[in-house]
Every structure is written in C-alpha cells, then in structure tokens.
Length: 484
Image 1 (spheres, rainbow, N blue to C red):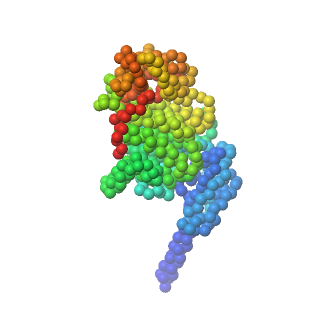
Image 2: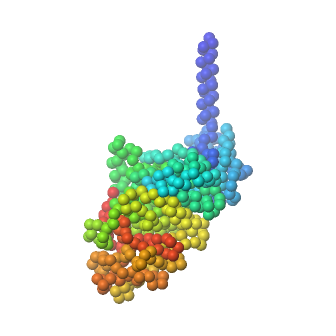
Image 3: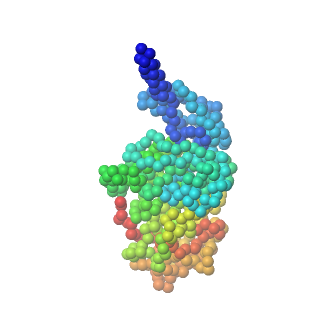
C-alpha cells in the first residue's frame, strides 16, 4: 500500500514539475547574465512561455508587456535606454528571471571565416592575454552550428573579458573591441560567430539566394551536398550558417557588424561582386535595423610573389586580386567601411598572425562610419582617372594629409593599351594625384595597382594607411565564368 502511495506521489510531483517547466518563461542564450544591451536603440526581447501567458520585461525600471502566442513564442520591443552602464533587467511571467550584471553599451556582431575565428592565443597579440582585464568588455562566442532550416536559438554565454576568457576569443574581434573601448570609454559587447572554411553564400538567407538566378548553381551544389552524410556539417553550403547562426540571433539589437571573409570565394571572385553586397543587404533586411554599419577586411597579400602584371589571358592572373576588387566595390553600399590589409599578410600562411593591427584598422573605420568622428580611417581609394596623351592621371579618396611612397619610388603600378596587355609603369605623385606612364604604351586606357596575390606595392597616405589595390578597367578576369 505504501509502495503504491509512493508511486502516486512521485507521479504527481513529476506532473507538477513538468507543468511548472512548461509554464516557465525562457529566453534565448543571447539574453543572459553579463550581457550588453545596445545603447540608444529600441531593444527587442523574445522567448517562450505558456500560450496566452503574459510576460513583462523590465529594463531600468520601465516595464513592457507581451502575450505568448499559440506556439508559446512571445516578443516585444523595449524603449531605448539612453545612458551607458549597469541596468536591472527582469522578465516575469508565471516565473521570474533576473539577469545579473547587465550593461548598456555598444554591441558588435563579429563574423567571417578562419581569419576571424583565429583566437587571441594563436595570434601575434597573445602576449596581451595577461593584460586583458576589461570588465566592461563582454564576450559572447556562438558555438558553431550549421542547419538546413532557420533555428530558434544558439549555444553560448556572455562572459567578462579577462585573461581567463579572452584566449579562445577571436583575435580580430577582441583587438577591435579593445580599441573602441579605449577610445569611447563605454561598455562594448562582442558577439563572435565565425566558421573556418565557409563561403559567403553560407551566411545568406535562402530567400535572397533564390531571388537571383546567378545563385542557382550555389543552391544546386548545396542540394547535392545535403544528400551526402559526409557533408552534413560542413560550412561551405549555401544558407547553412545563416540558418544556424544569424536567424536565431535576430533581431537582437546591435551597433553594427564586422566581417572577415573571402578566401573561400576567391575562385568565384567575379560572383562575389554581387554576392557580397547581397549578404550585406540580406543581414540589414532580416535584422530589421536599417542600414547598420557594416565593416569588413579586404584580403591581405598571400601566395609567393609573381613577376609580371596580370592580364586576361595570363595563366598567372590573380583570383585574389579580383576578390579584393569585389570587396572594394562593396563600399558603394551605404554605411560601409573597409580595412585594407595588403601590407599585413604572410605570403606562405593564409592565416597571418598580426590580428591586432587588423582590429585597430577596423576600429578606425567604426569611429568614422558608426561614430561620425572626423578622422582619417582609410588609406587612398581609387576615385577616377583621366588620360592626357600617354599619361594616366589618377585621383583618390582618403588622401589624408598627402600621398606618399614607402621607399624611393612608387611600385606596383601597371598600364595597358586597348590590347589589354599590362606592363610595369612609372608612377609619380603630383600633389593629390598620381601620374602613370610607360614608354611601351603610347595610348593607355587602363591602370592596375597591386594586382597580384602578393603584390610589391607601397602607396600610402601620410597617416600610415595603405592604398587599396584597384583597377580602372572592368575586363573579364580568370573568375568571370566561375559560378560554383
């Protein structure tokens, strides 16, 4: 008899416990202790509860309510918090959740492939680990996951930046956040979601890729890969990182995004000219925050030197140069910035270790683009050209306080006539422009600069930022017809 009573009691306890569990208000992983909420921006909150359950989110003493839908999902938008610093956050339904040690600051989403994923402990800045005592910099590292359909949550947790936590975090993201923190003196939250070996198409939604016939080959390739169990968790398939990482984090309020990717797409660099802007537009549309700042790293120098300039029929033509050019063209999108790193690479290592300077240059872009500071944040960017006889005159944006050659004379310029055969050229700084000529080309039509995988180039502005590689022509290159 007593045994039966014990069994019945245990069953009742289990049922009650399950009922409480089902009624509990739950939050996605990105909402947690030590988190950073975006200052000055409406704050989306969402989660799960019993259908019909009233949920109240209180931030800095102001409550906002929502009712869970039939599927248990609830969402609301809390008014912006104007001040920086600590705030109280509670979520109350049939249970109560208090988030501890929450800061209001600036949140940056940090994404890309292996060069963004490279950890502080693996980079040239690893000696900074003992000094990484920044309690108002907070880190959230998303556990990598791919998915065929949009997911509802990620795995990860917010932690304070410290010598115990920073070593496994992205070196680029940490250097970026540390620089901003030192310049702005307010809390910074960094969400790292990087995946080695991913293509840009992995980060784009299915709807965006299906909207353009140019990306049909990518979707077909992914459909074929999905049938192969050996490729089930690979990041190279279209949409799988958008589904696994981006979708479950949206619409968490952010200040902007930094992105270091492109190596995987170099063989399809011409396609990247539309794919990369499509990614930027896709994130902005699906995040629902308008044209938030999107800053990215142009690929550095890589692969041993080549001895002659690139031209269309040349077997040594550079896919990496074409990819860098595609990245440069993405600056036509509003609120974007590019960190040029053509002087920071390693010819024999696709993962150069100086991530500290990469992060610093991204931070300078952020200060200019996102914080509207009047600073020189970029090296020279090609603007336009005019032809005068056998001379090509080049004009630039971001000249700063003047153009300079690091060395005795400018290197890395090539010139061509209508035959599309490039030869090395003389380049001379004349005021704020550059004049390019060659005795071999009497009627020039095009100029290229630093057009190689690992170019010998030395144009900077006086502030110390390198000029971006560029070309004045738009002739088809070696990746023109590569679509998958």
